[in-house]
Length: 622
Image (cartoon, rainbow, N blue to C red; front, side, top):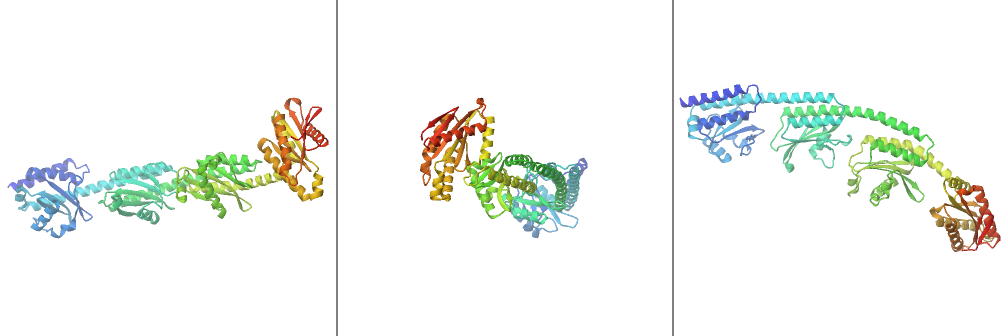
């Protein structure tokens, strides 16, 4: 009668608990807690363990001190009749380290799905020797199977509801960040016990979202790469990080946009329903990402076309090279938000760096970029698009993302435009294509400007000495007289130059002119400009230079000319000064210098004279 009362009490306890929680979704472990309470009350047990069979392992509850037990180590000894054989009991006692007995739970097909390990108390031994123990096993099996089925239905309903809500979000927005954040939060709600992250392909827009990373073939795990390439879910027992890794590809209609990566506990195995949910979620988010990308691409294309059209219109205006570079720099800053911009042009003495941020290329740590780019364009005319520059040069660099587009004129690289950013993978492929288009549209305008500058240079320069031509000097002095307060004009003539030509030949005469022109330029430098006035006459103009400074310079020139020429020659010079308050014209200044030069030639040569009002001051060779 006692054992009958026990089985009835157990039924009553479990029924009361079922009725109280009929509308709730509770895991089977909650009902086990009720059975543990019954076991303590009815059988004086202090310890009851529940082992659920999952993927060949008998897994204890999370708060248990037991480890997962391979089922195949016990299955050969489990018999259909109860109690278990002495061999089985001894095996379980040995593995679980308790004096125990086992309640075997089976499904409708008589397959074991769980074991309840109970302490082998005298009260339990008495109960287990009766037929009621079989009734208890059937009762617990039926109840727990019902709970598992109920929990599964609740869980599947949760997955379906989550998928429905995510689909609604995806259909209501074209914001890529919103889509990604919604996906991350959905995974966290569905699998709160596991870490997860999104790994997106490197043609995505720049992202600053937690748990979102850029896909890198060099760093990703092989199973992740396989999922990204194949479009199939892959898994991996990642022992190095003590995790079971699941990789779910994020797939749209036009391609694969990344991988959803979930880090589960080592013994966890995702059910087919969970994998199906994750696959649907990844595919739905992939389609949403794709639609958002296409939406933004269409807007970007319109903006890009407007940018190209605006640039083309401005380039068709009569701008000089500096104005074009300033305009293009502004356009590049607005479109690409780079850390640095630089325009580089080849020149006869190396490279010319232009643009607002060209100062960066003058820094010492910029040499690695300049050398790399120069070496590339020596071999190729193709643009450069590098997402991780520090890996290319195998050293730590300040700027990791870079796009470099050559400026090609007459099928030769005449320079390049480069943009840089501190962050790796900062520039998208779309940015790369847009910059190519901008620079190629600009190359023709820049080419025309360079040709125009070259032509103007030919007009402004004397072809033999490369000094400025007389016409350029006249314009320069006219402008100086408009903006400066005073200045000095020096006219120089080679003494007895006809004898040089008659004695040594005109070729030697040309060489002499070249030597003097080069020497004049080295002495004047940035103080003013030098020009060929005509024949053997040369001129120097010094804006904002007074008499003392001018006399010192001319004296140095007259003294040094015989030392730098071969055969040695001398020169005579005339100096004319002007002031803004004396109403000078450039014709008058030229005439005054010519009068002073005439006086120097007629009074001994190899010296200079100064025109000062109606008087001329003679100066011997200094």
